[in-house]
Image (cartoon, rainbow, N blue to C red; front, side):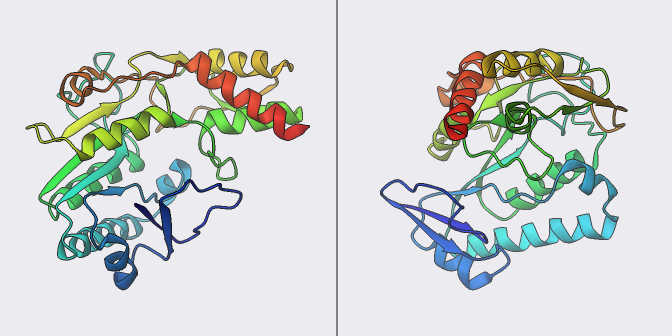
Length: 278
């Protein structure tokens, strides 16, 4: 049995497989957290905060409140008997401007964005409460079900916009390189991490291969068979020029490796978009 705690449960339009149950509540609802965690062998912490730009503008007090709230939730999980927790963190922001690419888990974390600094603080807050915590530093995840209404998640947004004949907003020249990992591969890594009993506790989850924004958008337009329309705006100071993750540790320790190529993932998404448009 898989139990989901989400304040907007069930997700609009979601088709739930057998064996999935849900609790509609906020993570700060102590009783709901205890009810959702009751009897759980493992908990996957994937509660988000907000988009990067909004977080960058947030006051320090707001960021501190998020950290305190996360620590509180983690304590409630520990009190509920949870002894194994998998935390989905950000592999795209915690390392900052890389000195070496691909970036390994041993690289010093030097985040240049509020999101990266917050992600590191949340990692510490969670690990301090639950005895067996595994941190997954996830690259740019994409795939079916990705929301496109929050200004975050380039792949999903680009698919929707280009399919409608709209332009995609690009920060800077489009030369920025990112590591795009499919949601199915992220889910596989999370399940493996929940069963992991080794000595490591931080894992990168990406592909080890970089794709520029320009190349990604060209790929999406080609798969959708539409013209590529872009609107360039100034680059943001908190965006790094390149972020590609070394996933050798996850391969060795978890027996995990990414299986969905960016080409296959984009082809699948484009097919879904075209199907919805019929």
